[in-house]
Length: 624
Image (cartoon, rainbow, N blue to C red):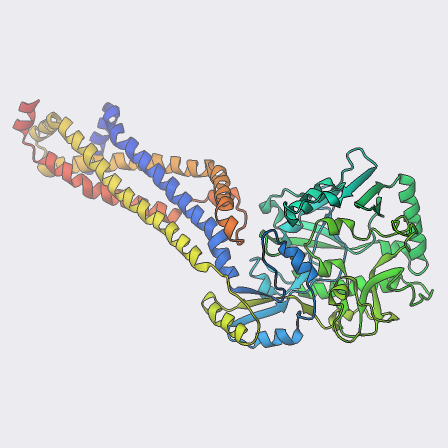
């Protein structure tokens, strides 16, 4: 019997017995639909896990963050607060960096030094609200590769790559709740609550609020934003008064704000062009990555640009100076800035308190002609922070006031204004954090041992083995699904075609009576099984792909929620996913299922087809 004739017979049977045909087509359709759907989403979940958990963890295991700051333990202890107040001579310096670079399998190392610029603001991330970016740090391309796959090279005239930190994506606003005065009573703090809870209660009562920015990572990464550095912001809109029980915040009127602005312009205008010093430097950046964890508060820019940025920042102040001489008595008192003692460059809130928010950051720079001292009831002398001002001081012996020097600048005898804009490059760099990139994850234990042998006390808390187990579990999903697919396909075809043979005995008898051989009967039922299987395969493929695309967003929401409530609570190595991650089709498994289904249909259909070919014409007709 010709193959074309067999196909015509099967097509006619399909039209004539649609109901029976669906007993095979529908199960195969559902099986293929589930196969495509589950395998694709399993692959998508595995890919997402690789990107946001496994891949990130493995890649970040090549990073060792060496910190000289030891945090005190204990319930309620705020680690960031401890890190902020415990600066000092234990900072790593250039010599330490060179020592670390000699260790085998250390690919790169860098001091985590922030650029000494207080005011870094962008309004392009959240329209209508200025976001202050804290702890801007220069990083080389080797280390940047741990946080982004994009090019991190600085090219003059092109947008500058930047890796934002999600912790900085907040904006601050005032909420006086219709009041002109707000009193904060520190005596209401309860010892039973713990320090963090008491601080939170105080912050909730402040007229200054901080709110996180909601952003879409896919939309933000790749976008260009304008960032302003330095300059003078708006004058403070409130004054504060220290009372016996706390602090009283008093809202200034428009007239008072205008007066304060004019006083500032007059004071700064004596020695600088006020408009020039007030205007910030502005640069266009391209977002190439976003850090989304609670252990790193840094925002990274190329180290080549960081050096140029600080130089331009200082040069702008130098260019804004007029010919009037400033007395040394006014420097570090009326006019403040960075200090340089011939060795180290100190001061600058961004360089020292980056990422630490709360009451302190909201209340800094509140001194001025309107601030009163409760004890003396005398006006405190106004002090103005000049962007880019570097005050040269004599270097003090010892390190008795390291914290003050680090936060506010050196307190040595003032020599004058330092005239060299390249002072940031000349100064000895120091930091309480050193970033170390190792050549591969297998070398981590060796590098950690060598660090400790050299006196860098480092306790490795890397948990990569946990993630390897999770990866193994995800790989098993595909194996189990493939085995299930093979078993179910075979069972469906055998049972359905067996039913077809039982219901087609009269038909078999007729074919045998008109001269059909056993081989013809066998081919007829085998081709019928393969045809119905292929119809179910095509329908299932279309439905499977459609469902993958349809449920990509719900799966993304579930995955992010699952990660947030499980892994993210323990490990700070995850990043948010996008719906596009879960819209991919696993074409490799799609091909595997296609081949398996055809092979299974051919092999398994032999059993009922052989059974049909053995039925004699007389037996078939007599049974009917």
